[in-house]
Length: 296
Ligand code: NDP
Image: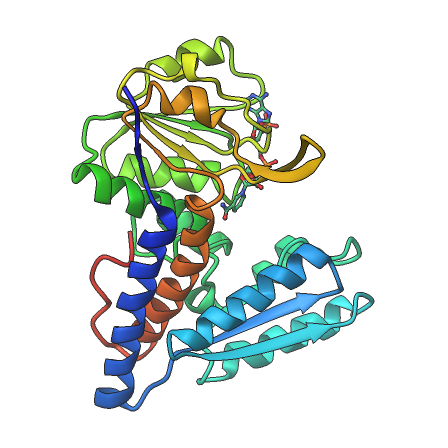
């Protein structure tokens, strides 16, 4: 079997187009323009690239983008004061603090200072609790993107066996909650899991988020299963730096029913879902109907 390739780049473009048309309607019918504030502390090169890309795509869908670039030595008090101002600013519907923060800043404290209604990354403890109890929340962007692709491919996920590899707060745990919310039977695997290969082989859906290049080989995949590869790993191959996932694509694609490539799979969906979350936050803040198909 050769797997169907789930094209995250094309799907992300569809999501952005939906967001853009909803934004146009919001402006025309309600005189509201959604706004996303992104806060970057320091000069981490990867973070700078992400923030630039987020800002560009925010503007492309017709939203306002507010970038706050702070010095690496910014104090916690100054950062919290900025977040407080953004929380109170009615033109800002989404606030994202780019992680990782410099070591002298307490990430949990900073993230939990964001108004949960504006927490478009879905990392605030209130949103974590709401998601965990099946209530309306802001959902972390990467798992939301994975869920959208799975729903698009399968329709209903009810009754499917899903294995999530990785238990991080930003990917693994929320992914598992979302799959449970869609009535999958969910196993969360991690570095202490025994017989990982056997655990994976039982799964109709494998979501790999371990941060280990090509760790999951094709013979861990049940024939016909759907494989969502969250991993983004830079490795040297044939003298070049290449991007690979957590799944060994060639061997897994030969067995799976469907698979996301790296690059061009989960990655593009993450920013698309950030825009979707900002739109959702804006609609909720203004008591308007939420866009369909863009939330969990
Ligand atoms: P973390 O490092 O926070 O978590 C990795 C998880 O994988 C941990 O739970 C760890 O287990 C588990 N793990 C590590 N090694 C093994 C192993 N040998 N066997 C089983 N489990 C293992 O990573 P993130 O969740 O932040 O990210 C995971 C990957 O996803 C990375 O490649 C990252 O770059 C990528 N990513 C991609 C995004 C996108 O937009 N596409 C967004 C965010 C992340 P334990 O808890 O026991 O240590």
